[in-house]
Image (tube, rainbow, N blue to C red):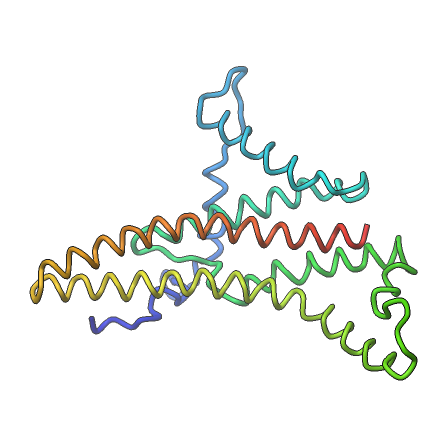
Length: 226
């Protein structure tokens, strides 16, 4: 119980060198490229799931927006697999780092916004000033809409960081309480262990849902600008 509560969020190092790049590249091993004429059940299930998510996500896009399909499906696979691997014991979850999430959110948001200003300049500028706005409110609304535009990548990154971090902290606290209660009150320890198991199942769902929400919001930003 003397362990630092935030120790699991410290970037791991090996011989003084950060190994976060190796951790980030590790999920690629979970999605092997099919090299057989007839795939096994795991690869077939992965391909079916990818096609299902991609079809649902790209249904609202025009042909120009569908050119982002490879990037979006790669994004959801990376975030989802990273979140799931972070639930393993003694593992590190890169998506608990706000800097990494901002590194994903800002370029994708900027790419969608630049695409909008390039191909739909008038429509993109019209978002800053809704139709029928009273003249005295025009400066204030322009400022508000500008702030709301620039806060979008921050909201993306903070949402993912907060949800993953909160789940890990809660699991850590309940797990520590279960160990302490084992010697004090076994029935209570059993109850907290059941809660821990249910919370772990919930975190598996949260890991996949947050990956989908992050990618879906990027897709919506793209849809508004194409």
